Image 1 (tube, rainbow, N blue to C red):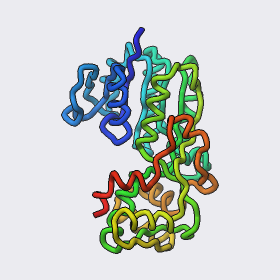
Image 2: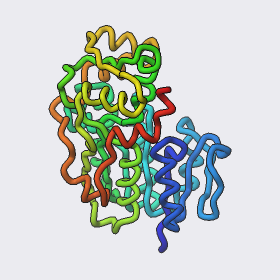
Image 3: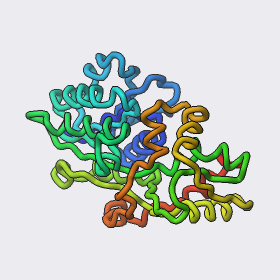
Image 4: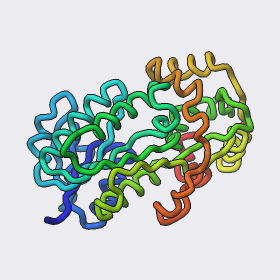
Length: 288
């Protein structure tokens, strides 16, 4: 049977790149979306309209697929939703699930809100009986998060604010690199990756170094200022609208002890991971 991949989260940054890369490779794809109008039509693409409040459309359409790309942003309901989706997928004959998890699982799991959602979801899927394989990608901080965490103060003050020491390393990964590894796993022989976990930190850089990168690319002085956890928390709650647990996780530091670059990434990606400088060159309009 020819490969057919089911994609959840097809309209987000990662899911859209995964979908397009699979289509460009000649793989048939089904995308589960709330609004089909957001997705460009393609001869190899089937769209199923639905949401996570009612999985009936998913359950009716998952049959005949060999693999599932799984990405859910709802941290509170994530364990329940991922378990329900995975159970339906495996029961329908899906042989491989590639899931976007988080490096916060490696950095302590339930000790943070972000880590808890992903950790419980991973555990629920791994514990299933008579399942297919399960690949968990655990990315570090998304470089794209800078657009909603830092853009406002970069524009208004020329400053990046955070709670860590100016010379403390922080790990980052681009969404393009996450998508690239996901596609590799979805195209390689299923047995090659099995139930593996891939930690994904593409660049480890200090806040002071990151400010210097922004200064270079934006062509104006950008500095870094360390602030209290309380001030950072309040900023995220008030300006980003993130819930308490997520805001606290970001303000207090998510990946303590897991700030090193993942050494296997160049092998897995087939190239060096994207740097913040490369990412910013493509996305600098968000900060001007």
